[in-house]
Image: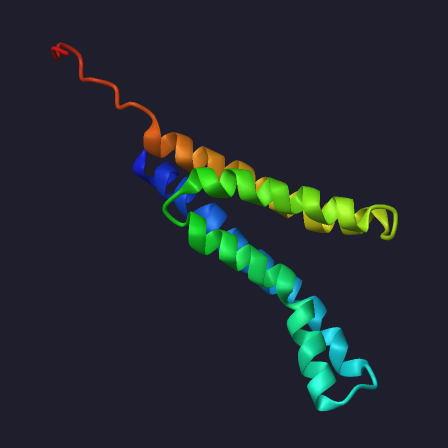
Length: 126
């Protein structure tokens, strides 16, 4: 695999995870429209940021252990689907579960490229 491709496969899931956490964090801004006290808004904001924190925690744990993220991100998608099934429009499921599954797949590819046995050059003895 070329170095440029290796670099893209390595960085894509990490950058997408950060971007997805930021995207999820945007949904927390709706607490500021609620008629709550400052302490209640703070608590509500923290609760709304839990999904973003889970994504960032998964990224932190899996930065060098891609196989963990290859399992964790699809599990996060399944967790959200099981908790929200039937309560949201189908497009919400696509916007949440889709990126989580894609990031998990990209971490799987990153892990596979890192642990794939290197091919011996022609004529080399084992």
